[in-house]
Length: 81
Image (cartoon, rainbow, N blue to C red; front, side):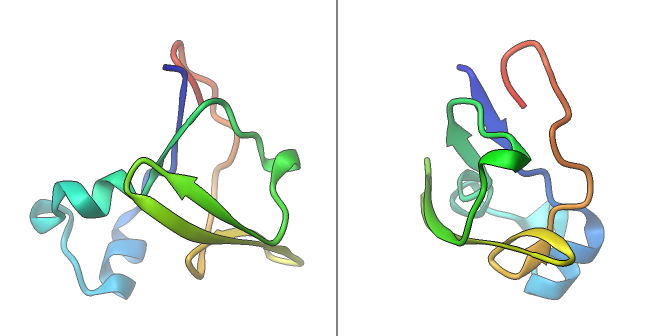
């Protein structure tokens, strides 16, 4: 660590057509970034996760990861965000 984890909620899983129980390790790795990344650091960019690149966008609704809004950013944990 530290790591930044984008923890998808049930609505995000439903929008992607994947259930939380059936999410593969490859899908979950797309939600983990090495290092601490706070909301203020985001801009429209490609972001490299441990599972590959994802698209980050910052706009009026907040920050989105591959089209899904990040609802509760910057929740600090012992080993990252």
